[in-house]
Length: 307
Image (tube, rainbow, N blue to C red; front, side, top):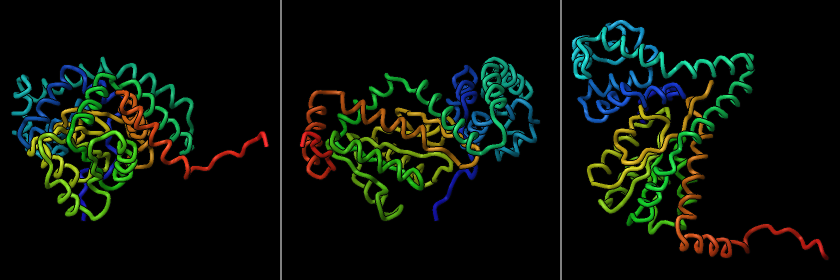
């Protein structure tokens, strides 16, 4: 049975993304990527819950992170603070600056909403799309396109609901990559692992995972890292367990008032990536034209209105 690392919607909102880009957030991300297992757990918890971290006692935060209070004290010193109280004060100071505009926006949205779940869902979807579009860096997109174009083989991986996103991305990338493999197309984890068996350093893995994160996606991505492949991650935040493994990170905000996560913004990133690859060179434009010509016989055509 597939294990999930999170069972609730724990994606970072706009405020969380702003905190992750702060000086303290960047230091936490560094520990998340290269620290011990306990330091990674604490860093991920604080990146996801900076507001709670700024108000929790050392005992409460230790329990929430699954570590001891002594480990938490050592973590604070590793960040350059004298102890946990100084770390908590730094969290509060950082949040005061980065969250003020976010709280103002949240209050404005709350005044427009009532308890209608449809309205709340639409508002979250629109906010996810807006935040994702504003955060999509053209330079990162260009680097991803270059990796996909130069890789001997591109592997696309996603479990659970992310498997459907992987299928859509595979369909879009198919005409423009030298060789493309949908790792989880059918057959489960064992078959997926078998498809990655011949992965090499000249290849790229595009891994997709959103809350709830499938542990299999993380394990197989670590395998690809060990094989030296280029790793591109499409996920919901820098606190995702995929983020420290990625050479390039594509963020699609996924918060939702009811569902574990929303896929709307992920589709935005997928379409942007496919479009960027399609127009990246003249050869790809020619391939797109030939593809349209090849499938035109199978498409419904409008009757000639002149007859």
